[in-house]
Length: 222
Figure 1 (cartoon, one colour):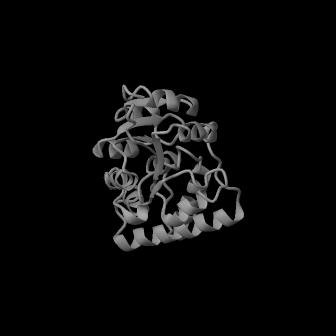
Figure 2 (cartoon, one colour; figure 1 turned 60 degrees about the vertical axis):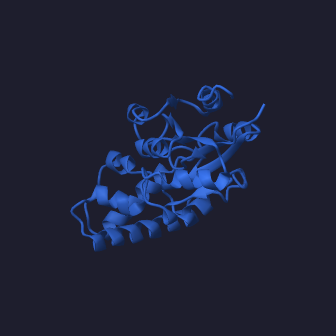
Figure 3 (tube, one colour; figure 1 turned 120 degrees about the horizontal axis):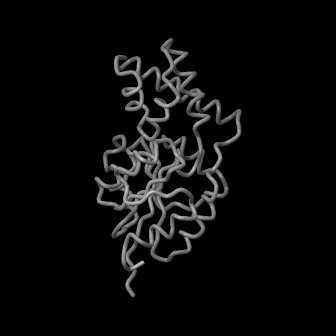
């Protein structure tokens, strides 16, 4: 049988790791530093996955570009400090076992497409359990914000994959995957409601142990 190289492309925040504690704390610091009212928790989590400029554009549309730039700087400073002084954001249950299974499939290649910066992703991937697992790593520094398909298209090109599936917890992930011609699988444990994710997903799963079986239903030759 001729195997088709298949890209399994992961979002990070809300999909592989639960980073909401760091995100919420850094947002609190950023808005306080700029003397702006803090949005609600739900509003903050609703923009996870976007680039920071796009996120602050949605959270405070009345702020001018300079103020949004100051918010970005304050957020990055706070997030960097938290990385040095607090425990790392934990992986979701079952994530590592799932990655092991996927890496055992000959035709699969794993990748990341995240709204994090290169520095932020490097910190996540410093976890010894994640080192060397991903053949392509797409970050917000080099692309338009999700749901623009640039990250997914670049990941496909870098890996030489013939087809792919985007795994994520937000509507931004699902829309990006679809715009790039990928299949899409949403996860219910992240920062957008499963019903919202499901509007643009081919499948929605409730635990990592369902990911490989669901991927195997996407194409008839798996």
